[in-house]
Length: 121
Ligand code: 5GP
Image 1 (cartoon, protein in one colour):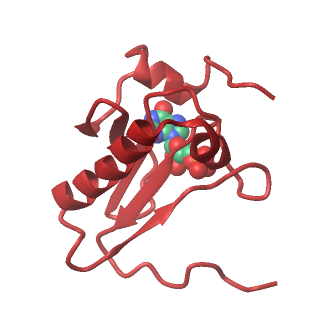
Image 2 (cartoon, rainbow, N blue to C red; image 1 turned 90 degrees about the vertical axis):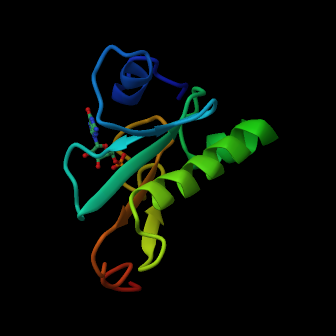
């Protein structure tokens, strides 16, 4: 399956759909999740057309990867979660329950987040 340029995050990147922007650099955009699961819940997405974490880490340039990781830090800094800690989540593919087929990392924090997963089975 190829990249679908009509996915919702591609539309946000093109400015066709609004977002509540938190941070932007040359290679990444960060905005608040529309259905927050924690007091801080920000999505960080690359500006390039990458389907998933695997697609991005395999194909993105070193500059894109660096810009993306710097954006994660900038969001953590800007939202004030570095001191108390936070969690990064990259749902990938069917088993990961990825809903939007444009690579994104969720940054969640602002309260104790509990166990990472309910069970190992
Ligand atoms: P996934 O399950 O793919 O990791 O997460 C997709 C996330 O995108 C969900 O947390 C969902 O709330 C968020 N989302 C879906 N549509 C929109 C939208 O139009 N705007 C924003 N800001 N977030 C969205």
